[in-house]
Picture (spheres, rainbow over the protein chains, first blue to last red):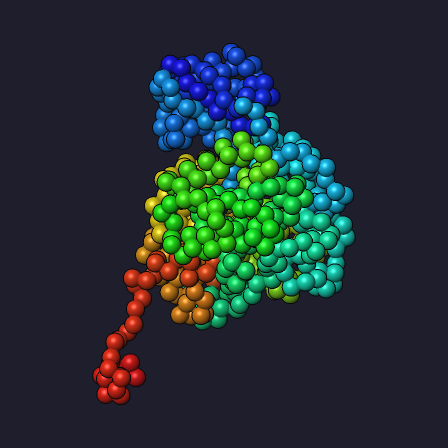
Length: 91
Length: 421
């Protein structure tokens, strides 16, 4: 499945400054694998040493936080937007 | 498309006072002062680091009756008073004898932040964020908000002559919407909850140049404003720390900063060291931190909020794990209460102390009651509860449960018949 991934400012050094890049995969885990294949080093910024999402990063498939879905196993249908966003406090 | 949050400006000397840099709270990675908020190594939150000067009680007491009396301990320039700002802070610390008697506490105070310029504690954080935005030469002053922050940003931006754009959930209480719309022509109501609004703001911050989102890309500076609550409590108690404090928890930032303030005062020799138990208060309809505390786990599982305490309705609280750490380390706790208890808390504070608090304050008072009733809080110790905002902003929450005791003809006989006398 072909998806679009929105990249936060602090990871754009891995994408040549691009704020949005294409990737493919049927689940979020596969999308991150594909992202890594094209932008070496980026996955380790999003996942911790145990391969889980870092505590202070929020990943959305469409408009839903994947922690409310199936985490890294969340399906990524064709054309969906994946967003990687730092967690921020306060309101 | 490539974009930056704010162009890197040439900072003037002392633009951030005695701050020396930004440090990741998770991994310790250090970056220079600027519009940075997330660690490039681990996404952890960046916090302001300082090289504090020697500060005396007398110097602070000689300062203005607002948060700038603590300017040496904040990321603001020494001439901060010369910039247009709202001068919040130094709000009243009321000894709450009646509420203490009702709850069975020996000594209780209410730190009442409903008397700030826009009637909530958010004026404190926004004052610091505004200073950072001005020093970074931001063109737009903005925020995602559950209401109080929107009010504070819109008002402070107006006074500073900055364009403001504030984003709120579209189902927000009407008084909070009006309290923002009156100060700015760019109030944006987003169809979604606060977490949706927060996500949108983070995306905009990554795309638009020159925008200072107070709680996103200038967040490290913004968050420091909450320290002044802790400084004031200690100073108003006669330069000593209380035994325990009950603080509402939304994102958790305020609680962590009050704790930080107490530690800084000790480190600077301004107060004597002592244990201070810190308690967090949540509404049951949005209690991810309380749930984790009670479950004995370290991870916060996000929730979809459903509570009348909308200013606490942050389902994915970024500082939640630090709240857990602090409450556990200090011997406090995190507790939650139902919406009915929140309403009862509002009425209780109003009818014992004459303070009309918003739903967040009602939550805090109700949690205090629950902590006493469940034996989690020592009633012999000196306690402070923080009231973060004014009840007129959340009037609907109690409008249906308080009403005239009687409606009568204008005659003594009619009054006598009510039995009120």
